[in-house]
Image (tube, rainbow, N blue to C red):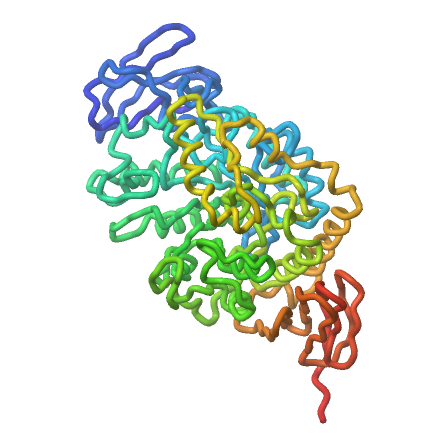
Length: 586
């Protein structure tokens, strides 16, 4: 039996609990401070709430929406799962090899149970932590999940809440931690009934999706608790190791203590209580290390944050693209700075933003607090054609980008399929039932991505794929026959070697940004990590790269290379990891 049925609806004069299976309607009793209560309901019971005789709505804290976001809620007792991970010690995100995946397109089944069938691949690759794109219940069968409307629920087409518990248990059995992407800054447009129940949103703050979440009003305490309780629930009742927080810059909070700082301390308490490390990873475009500065030092206390500047610096150098948000990047000097200090926009003027942007990363900051990548769902899916780097870059360039990210002093993240250079795109797709909403999403995508800029990038006119077309979703499914094909297998083997090397070499496991040194020239770069040198070249023809030390051995290389004295020679685009000894005296 579950706990009492409760609801926060401070403006309601009457609240009725509806039980559709029996047709019964039970009045709920006021419990003070805007709360209403009724006797507990058994696991599997469908129910809904009606305020002041209005329409029946799902529970704002619903855990299970088997009939979709507009249907009744169903009671889910999380204690029914018998966990087998008692021996799991946990895994901090810092320094882990993270692997981001979208449940619906990762496996042929498109479910959490289907994703379990591919976990052995991730364990064999050397992944430490699996990051799931949002699973909160959202409208339709397929979508990215960022238009979820039930913060506590798991999308039913993915298997519902019980499937998430099974997935986490199976991942832990393979030594894989699990991070869940959660969205606290807004709800999607369809099935969003939260504002009917209470002051969850406020016109004092504005976001790209409408009014901001009410985190700092005189009536905000229950709203903050709504968010914080969901965080604790995911970590404790679903045994998750980490949460990735979407676009935290849109969590406007002028209260004395920012929600993120409070969340950080709450999560630290969960870690202490459960004896396992728990991590919070913020997506932030502010380029400010205050995000990962401990709360005791006046920061927001996030364990780590996404750092897109490394992606931008690397992608622009290898691809030559400089459109839109990439306008501030594209030089080898910028790439070298990103590898040493993470933020390229660190207080300098940003052309794209038409303002000074960001702050320098303070000396002594752990590089593992910054999650970096060669691609992720945003950087692929928010291209006009959802094309991956593998669609336009040769394998040599993909090998270079993998080498720099996986040997960096930051925390590396892979996007599903990149390890074998997947040929499938990752498109933006939705499944809205409302014709007006579907048309709005379709037209918005065409306006944003149908301009001449993308035609210039692709070299031809662009017809933006329709997000509502089912083929946009089906085309984005990974092709699991590819890893066995020769070209793909070679890249997969390279990724495996780099991950193994990161694990085996203490110099590569180190997150000391201050110790990273980079020298570079036209079309080449050498990054020093202790006694290792990561030498990469992306220009045509033979290139001789200086090693600032006597070459001892080639630890690994994409193509055969020549080392002699203090140099390494690449015969065309490629990369090598070389161990050096001390510089000889003259």
